[in-house]
Length: 98
Image (tube, rainbow, N blue to C red; front, side, top):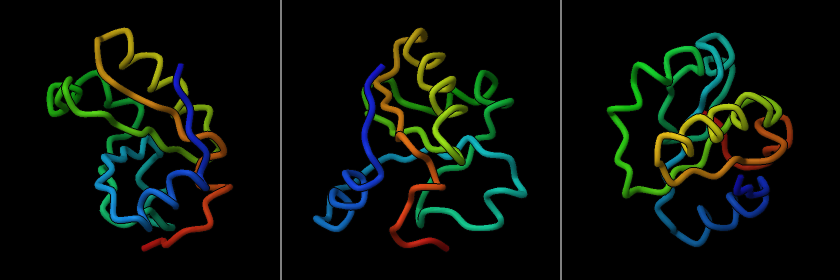
């Protein structure tokens, strides 16, 4: 499984890179704060909504600590998607939050 740190994601965003971030936390967690522009697909709905994703687009998976996003990363990898897990999740996120 590919991984990326929160710092690396923040640096890429600051450099103007267009990243495709997917937050797999629950609704109430996302309402408490999320990375601007992130796509929200709760982990429990991922298998039903993965058709919304493009297998040719690289995605970075995000959750609270990195565990659920790790599960999502493994699941999507098995389905043929290009995915990377953000280690540390929102607990380690020091960037902008909306």
